[in-house]
Length: 205
Image 1 (cartoon, rainbow, N blue to C red):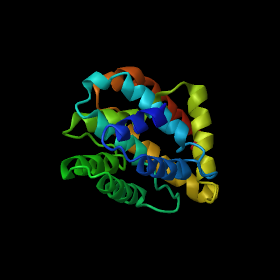
Image 2: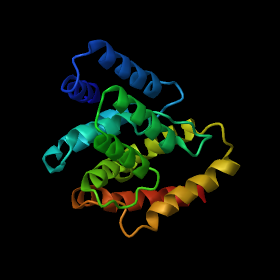
Image 3: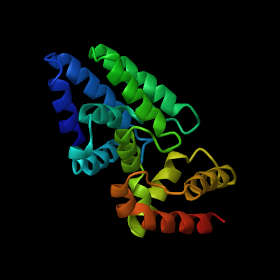
Image 4: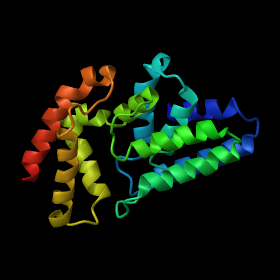
C-alpha cells in the first residue's frame, strides 16, 4: 500500500523513472533489514492505511507521505539520534527531487516530531505522529506481539538495561495529558493504549 502511495507522489513531481526507482530501492533496503521486526515496510503500510482514511483532513498529503517514507529510514537501537539522521536523509532526497525549502522543512519537522510525540501547532504533524503511535492502542494480542518485535530489535541489550529504558518510554506516554493529539485518533486508541501501557509496565516490574 505504501509503495503505491509513495511512487504516485514521486511520479507527480518527476518523470525521471531511474530517480524514482533509486529512491524507492533505498527505502526498501533500509526498511527490509533483518534487524527490523517492527520498524519495517509493514509499519509504513499501516501508517498509510490509517492516514489515507482521513486524507481529506490533511492539508499537505504529499509531505505526509514523504514523512512516512523517511521517518524511520535510519534506525539503530544503539543510537539516540535516529530521528535527526532520518530527517537529514529525507532532506537530501527532497533536494534530489527539487522540492521547495518549505516542503523540505515541514518534512524535517514532522520526522523530528516522532522523537517526543509532543503536540504540534501543525495539525498534519499531529495526525502523522498519532498514526505512528496507533500500535499502542491496538488489541492486547497485537500489542503483545508488538512488544516482542521491539524486544527483538533491542536484543543487543540485556534485560538489566532494556527494562529500565522501556519503563521510561512507557511512563513518558502515560504522564502525557493525552497520548493522542487529535480527536480522531484519541477516540480510536486512547483508552486501550493506556490499558496496554499499564499492563506492560506491570510485566516489566
